[in-house]
Length: 221
Length: 206
Image 1 (cartoon, helix red, strand yellow):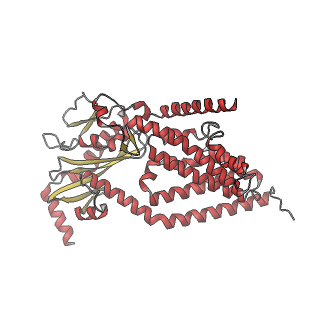
Image 2 (cartoon, rainbow over the protein chains, first blue to last red):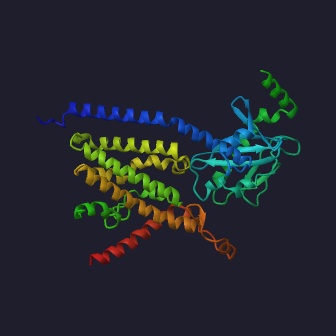
Image 3 (tube, each protein chain N blue to C red):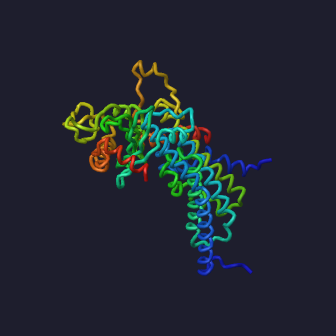
């Protein structure tokens, strides 16, 4: 007997079976691959933090380098700060996130112990234009930030502005924007300002002496 | 050994019946992932694998598929395969998966896939469908690689991330062509490929 493949019942049952098979297959694949994917995401984050700290990890296992350098994480509500020990000097690494032209942008900002001087910075993006906005991940752009100060002369946190070459920022230090990528550059500027002035307010306001005490308390606990 | 028809099924899409330059399918992703050679290569390979596998699966179940919902069944097969490939890439080639970002998921909407499933796999046996998928995937990949080669070489002076154009050229005043990095240039390049392809094939036809 030939099955009527055009009947409503057949169509309904057929689709149900197909969808169940596919769903089970994808769920299994997701379960099986999840640990590896999570490991990749973590490793990517560690590599980016090492990038902000300007550590060369091409010759070694990045995860190992990471765990020897970054030993402590400070939490201020939502904000997290990674504390790295680089050849005896303390560096703070602040995760950043903001908006670019096509999608999210993010990054890691490494500050010196004075919570003022930028030691290094690393940016990432989801889908900025290759060759234009995507250049924020490249060294020429990132290197500009090194040695800049996020505070003004009075010690207030004012962030660093990303501006078109030739224009001057009032009361804060600045770096050159990427020509042809105005919106991405403005996005970086806004992200830095938003994160430093608002989200990391608590962390940046605490003086180093107080920070030391909270650390010791944490150790005792 | 290999019959004329088999040969035609596999090799036809590489040249005379190329999905991109003759049928003008899959243009959108060809514009998006061809700024650099590496993502173009991975995209080409991913599409080839997915078209071939989807073709085989749909061909195997073609007699059971209810005609009224066949497009939906095809779509489910393609979507499942694309999701699988993207999960595998995320687990084993994270950098590449990040680079392809949304375009990997958008393979689902690549017209080449639905076109081949509807036009070939629904009416042919599994082996021929496999060859057809392989041929069309490779035909797509070739165009992607040609466009990406030109764009990366002249747009950033590199190939696969290695510097090709020497520093001395830049010192002498050579500059990378910023236009190459814009999606519009990919369209113009695809147009050039079509032009060259047509002029060669038209001569042969005469």
